[in-house]
Image (cartoon, rainbow, N blue to C red; front, side, top):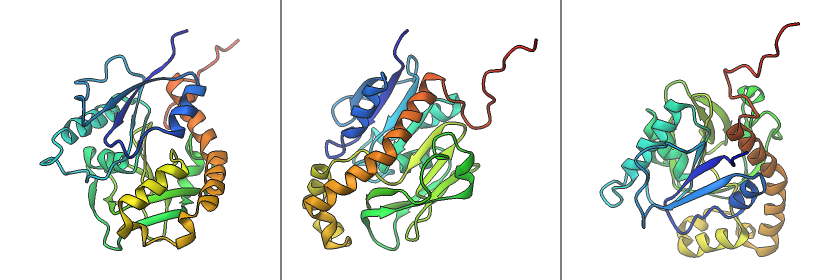
Length: 251
């Protein structure tokens, strides 16, 4: 059996696949990584079974400085229209929202940074990826922009008090996560060093090595099974929202 193939779009060296790559490789998923500052995004999604779009320090509409952002939004829009399983993280989620009719803006309440909780919405109980998550899972937050308005028809799956649109689904199987689940303590510490002004918005202990290591163990316990379910969706072993599972013949 041929391994499913995912297109991975990485806007910045500062936000690599990290744990997400390890978890997906363990699920037998083939990853085709495109570093967007170094290579063009593919023109189409032909030959791919799904898409991942990672985060970065640029804004979702900063096309003047990063003209390839328009190509990314086009691919994400195409993924939604084709019903391809898609996982878009932080900047990726903002690009997914902008590509499908939502609105992204600078967060009026300032940066959201640290190891924080998000809360599942009731509708998440019917979602194949979110249903089995705990009600208030830990996540890594490190963003200054927000998804201000969700795309038309999108389902809000998780929220936080500061910025409500934390996780959403567009169409049957395209997911946007405003937060991070893929990081390591080293990655988060690097972000804090690069952007001390944003890091100052978090509680100081959130950048202690021991605190980060324990937090990432908790995050892996919750979100690795989530990623495994995403891999099942890519393999066709899990039905997207709005589609019935395989029907057995009547006898």
